[in-house]
Image 1 (cartoon, rainbow, N blue to C red):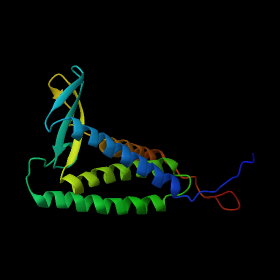
Image 2: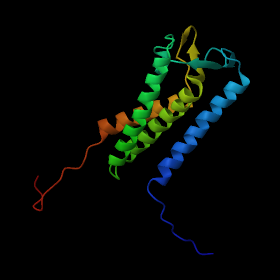
Image 3: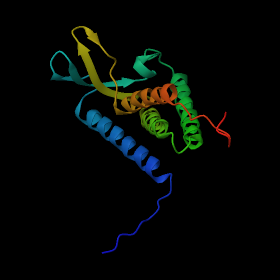
Image 4: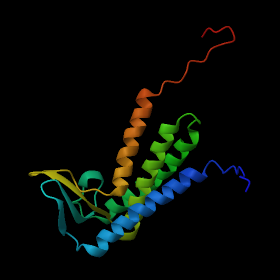
Length: 174
């Protein structure tokens, strides 16, 4: 059997990755929504980790979650939509050697899209992972939030530690 080298379009891998991450995010949220009543909690690791069902109408980490306004959701929806266009533009502007930044953009875009789907579908975002120690807890989050956090961390790493090689002339001087 001969092996054929088929060249796939450059956009295929990032689009497939975004698709898979969004499907995973939505599937995990669906499981929580289907099995946990809103506000319910189940201890997974006592004193450290619970599964919960929270609907977050605010932004990251519950910012503005207590504000009951349709305009807040519309604003977050519009901002996320604009962010997706900016992320796509930035991804396309990255060079072939900027692999870490490209992975970061795919993760950030996946997370933004996953939470945008929730905002359009529910008017809020389903959060279900709650980590805590004693009385101190991190705000509940989800797979999309994790993608954004890891993506932003990778992007910061890429920006801080990316050192383009100096361009030299024919004589070897700058």
